[in-house]
Amino acid sequence: MRSTILVTGGAGFIGSHTTVALQEAGYRVVILDNLCNSKPDVLDRIAQITGIKPEFVEGDVRNDRGLDRLFETHAIAAVMHFAGLKAVGESTGQPLRYYDNNVSGSVHLLQAMDQASIKTLVFSSSATVYGDPQKLPLAEDHPRSATNPYGHSKLMVEDILEDLYRATPGWRIARLRYFNPVGAHPSGLIGESPQGVPNNLMPYIAQVAAGRHPRLKVFGNDYDTPDGTGVRDYIHVMDLAHGHVAALKYCEHAAQELLTVNLGTGRGYSVLEMIRAFEHASQKSIAYDIVARRPGDIGACWADTRLAAEKLGWHADKGIAEMCNDAWRWENVPT
Ligand code: NAD
Ligand code: UFG
Image (cartoon, rainbow, N blue to C red; front, side, top):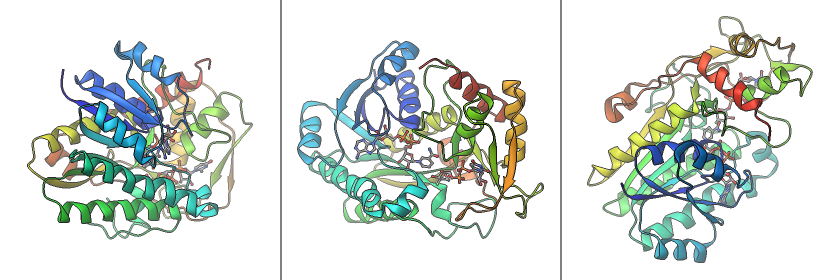
């Protein structure tokens, strides 16, 4: 058995899939989650997949006492920090809630880690830090910017991590910039469970295919893209999960490290291509209307994946057919 990893936000979408990948790679996992956007039944579902129920601590990353106790009572070797809020639109209306959870939460976690001499961290950043792309594919040295509090919170934490790395010897930090994570575990046991009406394309399409919404709104068909609709680099969540394990292993072998890498496939698909792929996977027709652009959206975005391949020896394997098949299987699981 390898070392024990603390996974903050491990009951959520990406954290739960990464927990599966960590367990399958031989790591022991302790999840810390306040369940503000997830349910505890995910723990049994993870156990059904891997045969091991991860230890669960219900708590908040902003709770110093709770963090200290957790680090005192568990031999944690490294932390994967997923806990945070992620709805771009909501962040514009509730900036303080976002800065408190995402920025302050990260600072509290880092302080507790520093105190406990745990200096290995994998952090969930986002392709949102690239703002409106000046050049595609997006390489890690592309200028960064943000247009909403969610994006600012990711930029701020990236900068805090850099300052910490420069100030204190021995930190091993991976800042992983995810493109558009979609899909679900192929077992159909875990997946994405957005609360209320989904903001993101893939869960919305899945719910239209399932008859939960009558039609999809396609936000704009006048972008400078082959069919005019927005193009994104969708990445299967299990590929993303394996990227985290690769980043952890990379950090484990370094004396100190500040690694910043994209996790994407390097290939973009338009909204209309995603609709067609999902129709094929679900054998349902997806009704849609073209409506105005969504404020703040960019036209196209996909990753330069060379650095991830070079540094981590990792690349995404799964294509959009698997992403749609797995998302559809998950959509049909009784909850
Ligand atoms: P998610 O909401 O499914 O998971 C986040 C988990 O963190 C939830 O289980 C929630 O209950 C928990 N949480 C939130 N605030 C907490 C706090 N203060 N203390 C303890 N637990 C807390 O989201 P996800 O899609 O799995 O995203 C995980 C991370 O990846 C987030 O940091 C997000 O910003 C980042 N990210 C996500 C995407 C995406 O499209 N899903 C893209 C780029 C980056
Ligand atoms: N779209 C629609 N209709 C919908 C939802 C989305 O047409 O109902 C379109 C969007 O306009 C965009 C594409 O589908 O062209 C993808 O939109 P998503 O909302 O699924 O994803 P975004 O690229 O806008 O943003 C996501 C996350 C952000 C993250 C970013 C980069 O929501 O948090 O990817 O990682 F920062």
